[in-house]
Length: 231
Image (cartoon, rainbow, N blue to C red; front, side):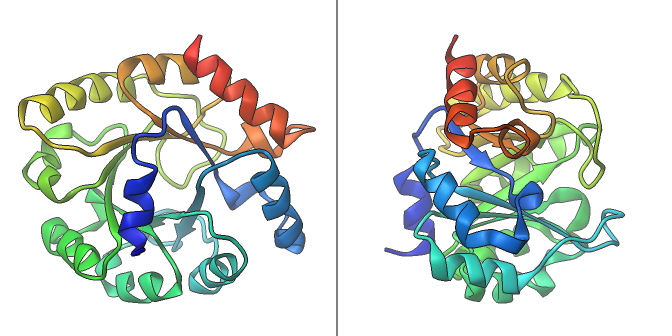
């Protein structure tokens, strides 16, 4: 099964909770993976930051490669880096199953999406809260996933921005009218208070950080998020 096929196999899972590994214990990745798998998660979200497109720096290809060696869970890799086309091939080789790039960071979004697709990896496009939805519309035919940020990429401690809900509602209509089939994902401030509105607006994949990793029990945290989404 190709990386893209791994993503398409879980495309219709809803609600799907993706732990954002940025907050995990990197000193015990094997232990964290074990706990997350026991909690029933179906995919993992990796935030890659370059200190240029966003002010923070995180991890790169070695962490992706290390995770890919120790889990069969699909790896949803969110590249918050300037001109990601420079590194797409390396991240694909490291074991990414889905690579999401930011419209704000790409001089040639369509070319970058084609590059990802040609590597057999699922494609995603992300946009920050203040970025108009119109900026990605010409390239939705090449997207397996659209990630609407509900906070500005790379900044911690921000409040959930409800503009993401409006974008999801519009994207649901566009997807239906244009007979497209992309996943709708949300990232930023997702917890038991915010997830239900996103689910009602059309999002089906939810990236969660502190709502999982700062809870006492990952299994209960994931179950609580699913229940909150569906209520």
